[in-house]
Image (cartoon, rainbow, N blue to C red; front, side, top):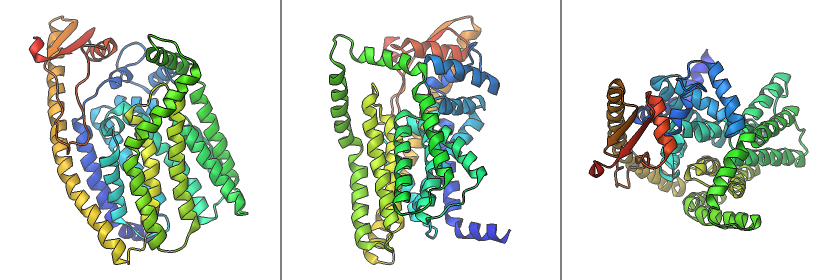
Length: 456
C-alpha cells in the first residue's frame, strides 16, 4: 500500500495531466458522430444492430474471407460500436491516453517524472498527425490506427525495457503472455506489423551482439508476431479488396507491374517530404541537443531511439506494396518518430539553462496555442454533431411516414481556421452508393442521400 502511495505521489502530475487530456479527448469523441464504416460495423451479417460477441465473431469470420485481414482491430471497432455511444467514447478515449502513456514510459524509462515530456507527446500528436479525426475520433479509424498502434507499442515495450535494462525475467507465464500479445500486435496493420517484426529482430540481434542471453520470451513473442502477421496478410479478403483498388487505379490503361511499384515508390518519397519533414527536423534537432547536452552517456538510448526512426522508415517504404497511401496511415509511422524523439528529450540534461529555458518555452507557447486550437476545434465538433442529430431526426421522421429512400438538403462545411486541427468535412453521400445504403440500413431505411441546399 505504501509503495502504491509513493508511485502516486511521484507520478501525481502525470496522473492529473492524464485525467485532463482524457476529459478533453472524451469531449471531442462525444461530439463526433457515428459515420461511414461505423454504420457497416454496427450491423451483424443479418443487417441488424450487433447485440453480442458471437455476432461480432461471425461477422469477422465472413469479413476475413471477403474484405480484409485486420480481424483484431475490426473486432475492437465492433466492440466499441456495440457498447453504445457513451461507453464506446469512453473506451476510445481511454485508448488514446493509454497510447500516450505507453509512449511516455518507453521514452522516460529510468528517469524521474517528466511533465513536459508527457505534454510534448500530446502536442506532437495534435499538431503533426495529418488525419487526426480519422485516427482518433472516427471509431473505425481509431480501432485501425490508434488501437493498432497501441497494441504494437505495448508489445514492443517489453523488448525496449529488456534492452535498456540488460536483464529480464524469463518465466513460462511471460512467454505465453508475450506470445499471444505478439499474435494480436502482428494481426493489426500490414505495414506496421512488418516494421514491428524487423524492430524485434534487430533488438534480439543487438542483445546477442552484446553477449547477453536472449530470453526465451523474446523468441516466443517474435514467433507470435510472425503468426499474427501471416494470418492478416494471407487473408483471402485482402486479395479481393486489393484487386478492386488496383483495377480502379489502373482504369483506362495497362502498364507493367514494375512500373506500378516504381510510381508507388516515387510517390511515397514525395509525400514523405510533406508529412514526415517537420517530425524529422524536430527529431534531428533533439538528436543534436542530445549529443551536446545528454544527461549521461548511454549508448543504448541512442541506439533504441534511432531504431524507432529507422522502423518508421521501414513502415513507410512497406506502403510501396499497397495500392493507396491515405493520410491516416501516417499516424503509426509518426508515433514511432515521436517515441524516438521522446527518448532523446527525456534524457537531456535539463540542469543546463541552454536546454531547459528554450525547450520549456517552446512547449509552453505550444501549449497555449493548443488550448486555443482545442477550443475552436471543439466548437466545430459541436456544429457537426448538431447537423448529424438533425439528419437522424429527419430520417426517423421520414421512416415513420413509410419513406424508404430519404433525401436531405444541407451539407456541413468545416471551419477554414488553421487552428481547427482535426479537420473534418461532410461525406459525399450524393455520389457514393455504399455510403447512402450503409447510412440507410443503420437508420432502418433503404438509403439516405444528402445534397447541397441550392439543389433543393
